[in-house]
Length: 410
Ligand code: NIG
Ligand code: FE
Image 1 (tube, protein in one colour):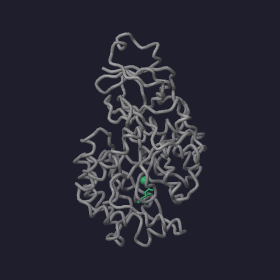
Image 2 (image 1 turned 180 degrees about the vertical axis):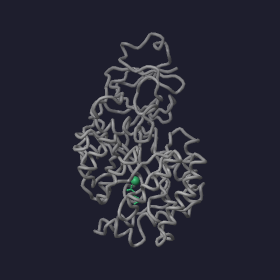
Image 3 (image 1 turned 90 degrees about the horizontal axis):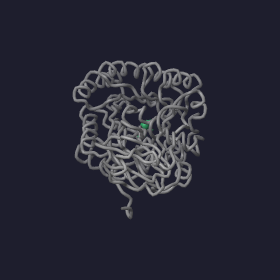
Image 4 (image 1 turned 90 degrees about the vertical axis):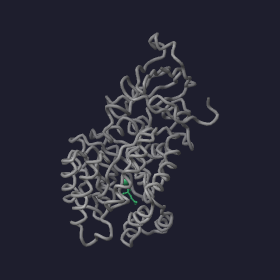
């Protein structure tokens, strides 16, 4: 039954209010038991029973909810540094993909790895992700694109979730691209997804969400709509890679199928923004991918003005976003998307929780929610995101247990 005292600023990130309202409490304390928060408030008001509990000293620094990276492609084989160099020399992402590189090349490298080897690779990423203050990670499949290889990836995620301490949310992205062996048989590939993969995934409880890359070079709105209908019948809610490279009306589809989130959105239209706002779909912005592809950022200010909640995530993958550094994505969301640090923090905590269906249990520091939080070596959110460092996190706590401690800190 521990309590964290001497918190300089507790960013509770309770969900109510506008995106820039993070409900901060100065000179705060936090008490938890059995992995759940019992009390959060000004230390002067700490109820007397908690005053005798074992206390951890926050040293007057910033405490935030455990960060939620609500969009990653964690399990993949190989890297694509060669394509990075080609893109820098002027070749386009779509041109590389059309020549058999891009996603198809990562599919080849992912298929070549055993489940054990893939798990080992994911573990090595997780070892570096947890110290950043990230406590929940959404993980997509999508580099297997065959019955066995998609199941292999989702089993890796299940094993990672079982191992803990990082909380894992699994998403099935069989509709990433049509793999080359099905190039002239698109309908057969879609049938593999709907008739074989989705039933197996639902029966084994291997994913909570079904994603699709809606784009000229991947899947059409009609194909994705049909996929989401079957997924919905099996209890998997939709997430969509929408309007990333072109405006393909992915945002409107997200609203129509009641998706939990629409992601990327660099090319979203005004009509798409209105559709997301009316349907209450979370927009997930991915500034690392925008940066690596040399794109203009999504119109985040217009989205927020229209009433859309905007989350921030890494999109960690070997092609468009080869970094799992969520605080880096957060600083880029400030500088390139013109979001305030408070808006960004809410976007990487409680709004990200909404984007992965965890808003009832995670993402904010209030009684009844999980005791997932991070201690940051900064006095406030502005200083933290302005002064970008390799890692400013001092402690990562999941379910009330310290899972990572900065070297040199007791
Ligand atoms: O989110 N847009 C589609 N999928 C990934 C990129 C995948 C890749 O290039 O390997 C993304 O950016
Ligand atoms: Fe992605």
